[in-house]
Image (cartoon, rainbow, N blue to C red; front, side):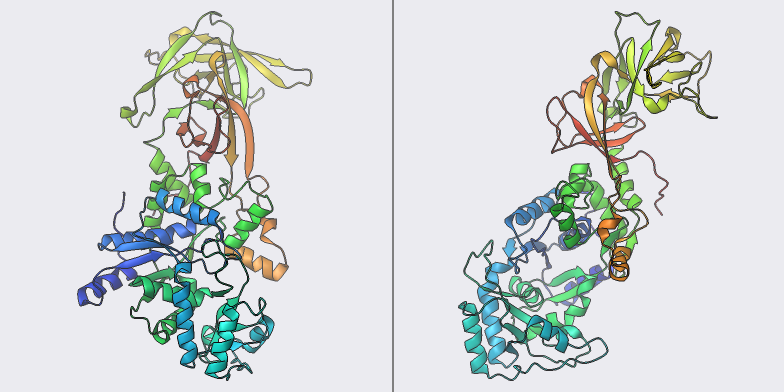
Length: 560
């Protein structure tokens, strides 16, 4: 795997010092997704950080599902997350579920009650919010805060036994309603939810809140460095409180890093799920989605994503990375891997009138001029070919060097041809052009009597293989970032759906070389002048290949 180590960063420095001082003997990290959606490009950074840092220091990483909210979770997501982590090139030490610790979490909650550190509250969710206070004003105590330990224990057991309806009661930590950190103002640690759980079934009707469960999970698993994104920084005091007050024998420590935000890319599971549920896309793996499965189906490679994460680095700051930076790495990864072939996406027929009608010939062409080890292939040529409609104009502008009446161009790897006649339909649309070729100009012959400025690609019509091409653009309009969309929702009461690019997908029908008649899902090619393409894993079938454009060939982006 490329880049087995991480660049110098603050977390790496902490780990180095902890090992040097003897504070820890072995590094243990975890990647703890909630199985309530598919992983996206932002998760790729968290995966890379946890697995790579642990491996660099000879440690281990667990894959743990934080499945404490059965209302939103599903085994479909559990399966997809495992597939994505493996596809990215990482292997976990142990597969864990937070739900496997529900008995232990319940016992620790009972311990808090016995210590006078938790109480049962009858206030409604709205009332709890109202009494919580603001960033500038303290909260107020619940009228149920001073219940006796005995009453709290009895009520908590009744909650577990299913004697109360959803929302009737909650268990809250008893900390400090005047704390400047709102997360310490008696946060809820258990709620009632009569919901079937994908792992525990109907065993439980009360479930721990994530903020309470997560530090317990880390402590139970012996996690040494709990690495998470920056939005959990304010939760760290409660994290430490839970570990201490629940008297956990292992004491993990939380460290936060900046999230990875990519321009024109959504990283909100809620928004992504809405796109799927309302069928704005054709599933979580739609190639326009920023999910790992969507990027995989589009044609991204795990190497490109890992290299992208490596270059973005690890820091404490939040920022937005240019989408073109991600695209840069897939180009770099595929330029020596992908065969370079020809495809015509919007075909226009060309008849070479002076080419013998019964003649066929084959040209031997390199599969990748930058990688000779990929060998050569045979490309057929005959009297009728297809070219791109954009490669012909009847009345061209200045400096147009492709085909037009009276002009001569080179056919890639073949001959010079000259346009002599244009055939139109009854509506005046060009449907066919007639050309002549010069047999002395065969590619590789050394002909240099005259030069042409234009080179165009083509497909032999007699052996052309029909194919479908899906041309993708970013799903979100260029002028909107994820942060700007949040602001738009609040201030202008517009939803992020208003920012969807209506031109994010164009489907065209064209032709590929006959040598590509048999392709497999995830096969990748560079189509001359068009870009890098991937065989779609959902819609491509034998006899009907479908190609997703991964990225165009060129970009103005430059790596610093």
